[in-house]
Image (cartoon, rainbow, N blue to C red; front, top):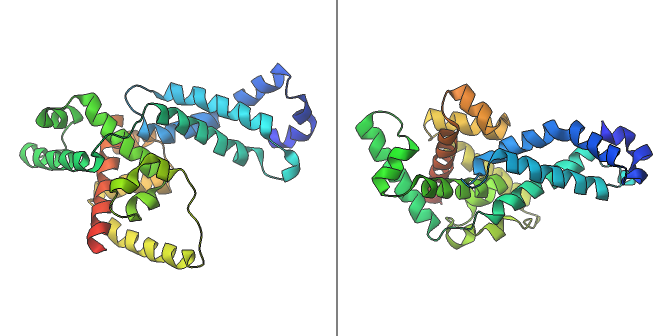
Length: 249
């Protein structure tokens, strides 16, 4: 791996051959991260856009990496790659006004259609019932999914979303006080109890995404659903968790 060669190659960063080899070696890592973040993609971007941003992030990591810090290059680069991809999503993911009321309307429409159709509704059917475009529906899901990917804990446990759900509030690292460990443990217990109240399919999808670390495409293949449906179910499951936890509080 690159970090094993870093001592010899680090000072030759202007060598195009080094950069080309670096990108080829870490392309699977970039694609993996892009696959995870694709659940938050708005309609105007695709996974290829994220890969391009990830390559830029990788090259920035290569430029700034200092082997003397004894940090594995892959760990250092992964943070830079993910950050570059999130920046790319942020450029076109302006927070829609009244995000949570719109999410509630989507959930109510989906539940109503599920009862009448006796199956999971397609995104196009939900959009038609609401009188929205398919892109508008996708935009709401993708923005909400982006918030959950950035900080699921903050989204679930901060006061009922609302003003606290602005994207900028998810980018600053939260302060760690002396009671942080106790708070974290209590939140884990609350989340565990809330997960038990979800429908099995939603619980499975969250487990595959957050615990098994599968990509959106892998989850779609495993659950035999469309990639768009993965985004839909993910947003709905996280929203249900948020409502369950808010009711408990």
